Image (cartoon, rainbow, N blue to C red):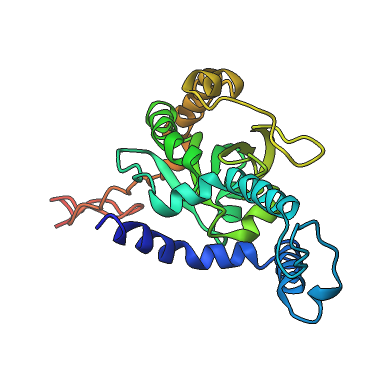
Length: 268
């Protein structure tokens, strides 16, 4: 069971890994690394290479090349240690209560632009990110405390919807440190985001604590303004009440018509 769980987790994330690795940068790096090994081990080609081995065998790695390869392997492992950890031990998903709307690539634009008076706080996340997993409970608590008709909370998985990642300029790469990202929208326009991103595309270090989010996004003031908007929606305007036409009094049967005099006994 200890070996089966990492294997199933790796197979589950295999399509995402392929999509991430099939980029020109990684493809070119892979072929360059393979070319180095192939040239060093191919008979007839390696015979013409220089070597520092004592036995003079140029078709085998010398001590300097072995050190370089081990050093580069250690760097690659350190840079991707989080992805490797998630393939072997994926953290549990948050299953608690929340007032959060989950967007897709087809619904996020319409929801953000539906009502210009509504303020949205949207989390851009990815399921494989450990930072997103640990932040899920904090974000859910904030939605329970501050959600109302004028202030709403949403989430979108940019690991699944790559077009959303490009449009809203949130990188899903582990090296960018942009996950999770909180963006404040009003009328479909971005007002602020955390963490901020520098010119190189890397996120400025920022702690995703409940206190920091309340202070930076000014949630208490936003909530008070949003409550006023909710109350104004609940109060119906006079035009909402239908005007009931006055009913005409029905004519009494046997009553004389206008202009006719009642017949007197003398006339009879």
